Image (cartoon, rainbow, N blue to C red; front, top):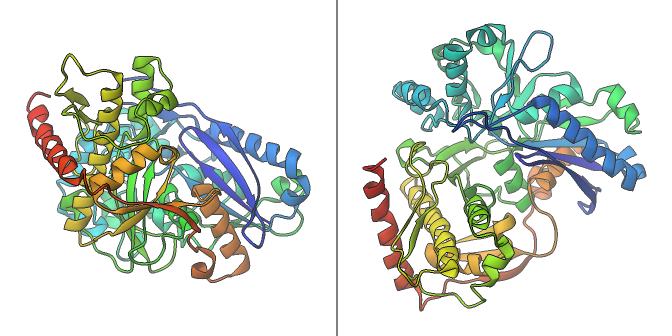
Length: 483
């Protein structure tokens, strides 16, 4: 048996698979986010441990014998979070999360140093880890001085599980401290934030062993013998392992809290100016590119709160047949945007409202706005040298057929829907646990799922969506001048 642990923003998920990669069981435990000031987003790292114990406890109750047979554990987690650990091993402050934008000034200052883009292949975004440490040094100098290790969220869980400070390439690539081409910490970038290699965890590939489960925890959960903990992956790379998007040209579109258009690459092909993320993949000698939008299903969740209608009710009001855009345009920048704007200050907007613009028109505009944000990511990927002909849909938003039709028509690519099953980050993490524990060939394990259905673009509506996308593109610079 193999266990995948996915530390998300809203929950920890634990998932068990067997040697045949059949899912035996899964369980989740919820997490909350603290927002003490506008633009801030934090979590207490001890809550991750409690949630992990709770999720594993549920698995133990339902599948005790299977849990006891675990031989490998894989880790996946939300990226970029700054977890500062003191010499005693405890977190010194709440973790500053991926969607926290307080360090936008520090990010701009680091990004102005040409070494960062040259070595990391990426813009230094406010959500990345390095500018967070610069902010802590400026505003919480005592905590900065007491920091012994800087860990990413999943690697703080690893520290609890194994007692070792280890990370892996895909997650480390999102810190702005990794030489992404060489897959190693860049000492000169660390020095630019007054840190050095001693503050960083050791690095392994995601498919390699990254520690051994502490005997006390193995005994607690009834596991006998040595249990290998894999290097694991950041959440998007782990999802790619779950979806089998590990070979060149394979891609997925994730319609979750945030949105991701992800493509695997056989080589390192950076283009920071496009605001595309170019990261190491979880597999050795593989990289990936992705466009990232910060508010995908979060945009529809926001509309749910405003209208008092559930997301399901809002989607059902649109029916099953794709509609032409109405002229109402929505920019989904509720917490700023990454690709292609790298703009932490921009905020969302509706434009083109009229007396006849009702709830259904607003819902349609929100879905189209997220689809057009994916179009921006598609254009950015093209500028970075990656062309896509199709993508597999994952995430909560993929349950809406109307939204998938909207995205396929806006992007002009086929959208594949996998058959029944859970192919997300926890499953990908479990696969990495299997590979690390057994030494299996990663390409033989990380295979794509069976495709149940393919949604093609609605050719009759492609011109109308192209016109609506042109309006969408023109709106950002107009709004930006006013913010």
